[in-house]
Image 1 (spheres, rainbow, N blue to C red):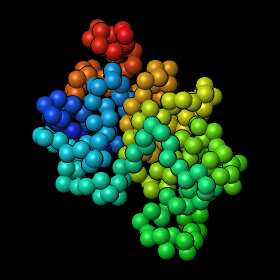
Image 2 (tube, rainbow, N blue to C red):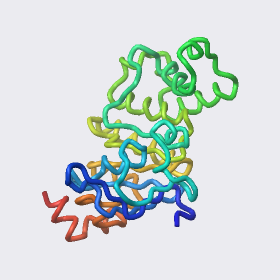
Image 3 (cartoon, one colour):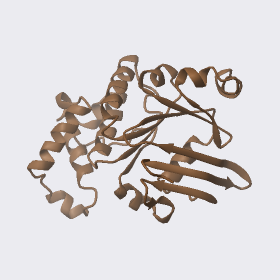
Length: 247
């Protein structure tokens, strides 16, 4: 079973109008692990994240968070509350608000609008805000409006907003797409500092970035696991070269 695993999927199937998006997929991730997921377009990477976050319910299979939580019994908001955070490709931050206000808002997402307007963070919450600001390397931009940030800084801010909710597992979809080389390097440093404190699943195409951050790489193809191992191992796999790297 899922003993000693933060995430455990077994023989998962999903079809959309007869198309097998996920086909007998089994996968598990250890607590504190940083797992990279690669594969050609249509391999099932986004559907995999949709299943974990409750957006898509599989036709068959088991999906567990830790050893006891059956994710298939929970909806999207409940899964977020359980400690699974997801970052989509395009950053979604509140452009008119400052960096600090964005983080503050993420801290109190469970409150109504009225309560949010009157909300003032307590000492512990302020400490958490400061900690996250330094983790995402934006203390100097704390009073800048999010709309004025660079693309990379917006991505870091959104990761910071997820961190405010203290997730156990972070799902990150192509986090360095559109970044400069410098921003990509800083993102690698950020992810390496998060590893161990959180579990991370990173879907990415940038091989040099994957090499910088990954221990284990899982290759998806046609909705199931084609290969798994270190980046060198999967890059040397003939099947992976044929379906993905050789293109």
